[in-house]
Image 1 (cartoon, rainbow, N blue to C red):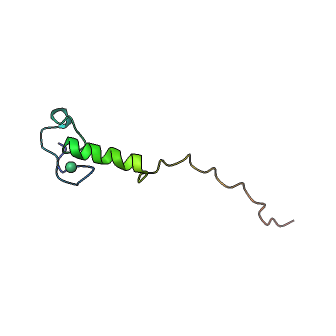
Image 2 (cartoon, rainbow, N blue to C red):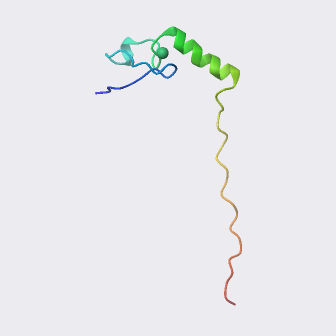
Length: 64
Ligand SMILES: [Zn+2]
């Protein structure tokens, strides 16, 4: 059971019944889905780049 889901845009609880009945899932309405899309367009969301590679191992002080 997936209770407690909320709209990604406004935070209102989504209508119960499953995402199959909500064509705007994960939003509560078309307005919110458009609002979220607008965020992308405005650049509020940033697509994370690829993870940085780990730093090269530095020479540890080894006892000669
Ligand atoms: Zn909403």
